[in-house]
Image (cartoon, rainbow, N blue to C red):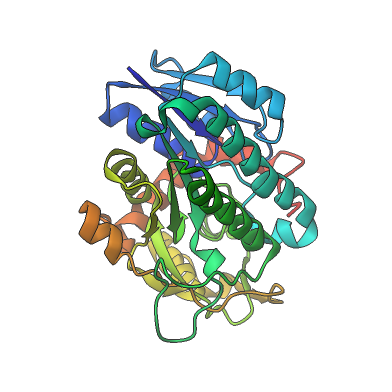
Amino acid sequence: MKTVLVTGGAGFIGSNFIDQILSTRDDLFLVNFDALTYAGNLDNLIEVSTNPRYTFIKGSICDPDSVTELFKKYDFDYVVHFAAESHVDRSILGPAEFVNTNVIGTQVLLHTAKDAWQAHFGDKLFIHVSTDEVYGSLGRNGYFTEETPLAPNSPYSASKAGSDLLVRSYFKTFNFPSIITRCSNNYGPYQYPEKLIPLMIINAMNDKALPVYGDGLNVRDWLFVKDHCNALQQIMEKGTPGEVYNIGGRNEKSNIEIVHKILNELGKPKSLVNYVKDRPGHDKRYAIDASKIESELGWQPSISLEDGLALTIEWYKNNSWWWEKILNTKNFGNG
């Protein structure tokens, strides 16, 4: 049985990925390595916590000793690296933490894996999960491709760009078996409630004001988290080391369109919308060209925005226990 290290597996996308792999593959053992910072939540993994092919180890990718011990204990065949600080607003308030986790932590992980795998690179694979935000902002036309120059505009996206370049350098310098993925905006179950869609759903359900930055016309490409996890699984199984794969949902919508869809689905009035001062460096538009992964690996998003939003809203309706616990923690809303 092969072994997969999932860093940041208690987070939103990581926990959905663990669930995906355990439910579709019976030949893999998963190790979830997570520091359980504010967005890491073991409640995301209650349903798989007793699975004999899954284990959780608390630890930080920034701690070389802990990461070294991890690679001594397990002979990992795959690393799927989600662990990152990812909230733009928090990166504006405290950039240093983002550089430490996203850049230094990735370097620690890369170098430990390189040393552990040195004799048999051909049997291993390191997947670095990144974001389309590293490309910067688009105008009204055009799309991000894998060849688009990196032009990050926030401390968060700059730190992710730095980690991407480290992964690239390890492939080029050491022939380290790595792949970089860059996804568009994810949404779905278990997303931390500071993010746009869960925040709007929860506030609307409670008849609270829905804060929308600026004019609400910033455009994002929305990707249901299960589609993202399916793409990552196909990359793990069929991807080519040294490549970059963009993963997008082909669902371009402005923030205010998303907010209005949520209000309509919940039967709430548009008067709940509250336009607030825009955040600094707010990118106007992201849009991914995912034709490379579609043509090379045969992946396509399978869940429409309408169906994905309906599923997401229903999940938040039925799992108030999950988000109410988060809203009552001291860290919520500090970003």
